[in-house]
Length: 553
Image (cartoon, rainbow, N blue to C red; front, side, top):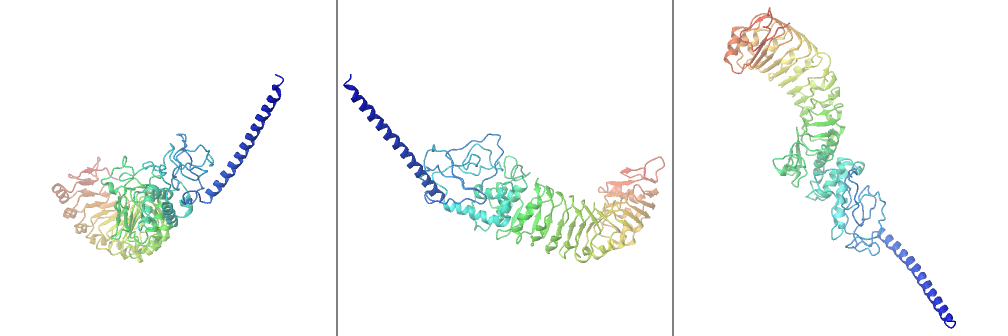
């Protein structure tokens, strides 16, 4: 045993030396590996080591690195807006720069809050009817050509909408761009002649559906909730935007007509109009009436230089009429009735081309501008009722010889009915009810032989109704109720074979409804309504053929 002790010591010393060498080697290996890792990372940051593919990102994005595997988000996570970057290729081995078929065990260099660029179980993009924007990993990286296509399209639509709008992931413009880049089956290029108008139409859709969270009544993008007689008419379908619901294009493929009325559109009308400026050279008709659009008409409306008809009636618009409408020297119809707009009527909107004006049921006030009677002499249809205009009915209406329909009811006009209203030989409808008008009826009224509908109700008119009313052979509707007319009901009403409705109640008429009128009432299937003050213990009027009797004044 004593002899073996030196040998044992030598073996222990040898083992210790070997262990020390192994330890030093391991340390040197770790240092070398670290230096190599840093070198590869620096190379990748310069755009190298990725099979020659571009590493360029889209505006407003950081420089994300593909993550090894999907990172599930909690199901309560708020939906993430579309990410305008290229979907990733396969996982890349960081040290070699070559694609790997299996996930790497290397931790991601990205901070945990960076959104994943590959599919996960996070909620889909803001429009849920479509697949998520990021595609599944493929066997090869996205090509530089595809990245360039996306960059060029982004640049093109940024020129239309502005970088701040495109970069804001909550805007319909951002969502529309994402749809063009990733979900549109046509996969247009920036050089495609219809790129701008397809972008504008998709923006219109997202702007009126809360970025795809709601839908339209007909032909919305979601086939499960929005029926469509033809799938080619469905918005965001693979067909040409010229085939989509309400869109009409010229022979050269440019949009000339947008008619999407009464279809459940909701949203900010100013967003829509601003994006339609890119169609200014071709758009002739914009009809978005009977929807739920809100906000104000933007000044950019004045840039739609080719516009001929603008229908925004029956929505929820507010604010004033922009004076920039004066730039639209081709505008023939302007309709914003049944909204909540206010202010005065700008004289700038009256061009020689204007033939139809609908401002009814808003909160406009002041006086009617003189330009209405000097600059738009071809006006035919005027509906300005349901507002708060001041003073007397302008005599300038006599300068408009082509008026066919004039509705100025439920305003605060006062004074007498001006004879100038009856200058036009084309006048078919005159409605001046619910004002503060008074005095007797002018003789010129009885010469308006083209009149079909005459409504003078709810005023303070007085005097008698002339027997010359029998000259109005085309008359169908005669509303005289709630005035202070006196005398007898003229028998010449019985000559008006086209009569359908006559209401003379709540006046100071007396006597008997003439036999001629009752004969017409009994012989005509069209003459269904005849109302007089023939009720009560001491009725003012006796009537044997009335459809209804009122007690009267």
